[in-house]
Structure formats: structure tokens, C-alpha cells
Image (tube, rainbow, N blue to C red; front, side, top):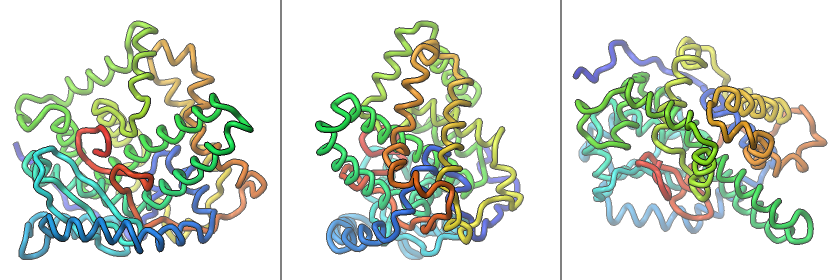
Length: 369
């Protein structure tokens, strides 16, 4: 199988993370970037303690990619950083672990970790997609804003017993988990923009679900799996699907495949490659209210597309839970309406398994992506 793209990749100078972020992810990020100074404080605090500790750990126990070590992976890192026009190229570490996984750690100066299991599982173009996914976390600044959500949710926990009660608290937590899942869909899009080879992205997601024997895998059959998962015939199975998502911050493999496939074929992918995309220089002027409207429309479109009978029964509640992450900030920004924001695209990314958030490119689960 030929895995080399049939055309040169195009560079995307000045691209804003808003170009690839899922509307639900983007609306929450735009809102949080309005808290001018808070993200900077969190970056500084993280760099003093957890960031330094994590980097020293991988510096001591893993191999840092360079022109002398894993030069082919280092070249993919430089290439993806150039295409997405990152302000700074993150460090890349290769860690001995048979489980396929990838993580982007650190808030102030993010760095990427790939496990040997992932490196051995994916071919070059699939690895380019995985590294691009992690670069998307870095460009979006997910760690900083996940940390903000973590602390604000803890504050809501303290107040919940007096204000909105346990049910309201569970809605907030459900909204937080939903935002995490949408941020992972965002970075799948960043990965395909970095590699500009959608078939490689599809193969990577299938391999993460079913292993390395790509000759035994089929795009069409896997897409049919996604359709079957969506169109369960029984309301009870729809309920089971919702319950299986509880406590899970990553979408299931077939969902990621279907969402990325739809975005590439139906939405903004080709327009972005042709140069039509939002620029970072315009980030400070983005309207919070408009982004929240876009997020709401995205969910409505999603509910209209699904064939899941359970969604039809609980559509109103589902929309409330899905929008709870953004709603957490509506009181902070409601009076500002559609005015300009004060922040830009972040430069930190996810941390593994802590309050500061997690990201990665593994098969799903605790903090794999």
C-alpha cells in the first residue's frame, strides 16, 4: 500500500486553532480566554512545579528526538510544526511502553511523548497524523484551559450544595467531560491538517482500535460499524451508550473515525487548505456569544443526524448537559455579550491524568487519545 501523499502539503501561516476546533470546544476556549491574566498565572505556576517535574522525568527516562535520535520522528515534528505555524516547536520524547499512546504535557512549554507501542504500530504518514494531533493540543492551549475548568468546577462543587444541588453539579461534570471529548475531536482535525492525508488519519484510528494488520481492515466496514453504533435499534441500547460515556474523557474509536470522516468530506477541510481559515491575529476580537451560538447549532445538527432512538427521548436534557461546559462561564461573560475578547490561542497542552487535563493519541481510556 502506498502511504505517501500524492501531493505536497501546504503550509498554513498564522492559522488560528479556531480553524479546526469543534464548535463546543471552541466556544469554551474563547470564553475562558476572556479571563485575561488567569491563563498566564496558571502557566507560570505550572512551569514552576508540575511542568518542570514532568519534563525532568521524561528527560531522565525516555529518549528525546533530535537529528541524532529518532531523526525521522523529529523531522515529522518539525514538518507538522511548520505546517501549523506553531510559535515554538515542542520537544518530543519517545518512551518505552508497549501500549500505543501519545501525550502532550506542560502548560508553559508543552512537550510531546510518544510510546514505542505507538511508534511501532503506525507507519510514517499515520505517525504524522498522531504528532499533528498532539501539536493541535499545543496550539489550542488545552492544558491551561482544562486547568481553569478544573479549578472552576471545584469552586462550583463547593457552592453546589447551597445553590443548584447535586443534580446541577452532575450536569456541570457531564458538561466538563463532554468538552474534553470534543477537544479530542478538535485535535483529530489538527492531525489531518498537519498530514493532509485523510486516508492515513483513518488508518491510524482503525489501527488504534484493531491493531497493526491494516490489510485486514476496511474503511467502508469501519464506517459501517460507526453507523451501526449510531443507529442502535433499541432505546435501551441508546441508554447504555450514554452510561458508557460517564467518566470517559475520550470518544470511542468509531465515533472519532466517523466525525473526522464527515469533517473532511463535508465541512472546512478543503477550504482551510485553500487558505480560507481564521487567523490568530483576529483571535482577540472573537465574540463569545457568537461562538456559543455556533456550539448550540453544532449540537442541534448532531442530534438531527443521529438515528439513536434514545436521543429523541432525551434531546432536551442531552443538549443541556452537552452545553454545560460553556454554560459554566455564561454568568461570567453574559454581560459582555458579543464584545471583543482579550485572549488569543493558547500555547500549552494537556497533562496526563491530573487536574490539569490530559491528552494523547492512544486507543482511548484514561488519558490516551
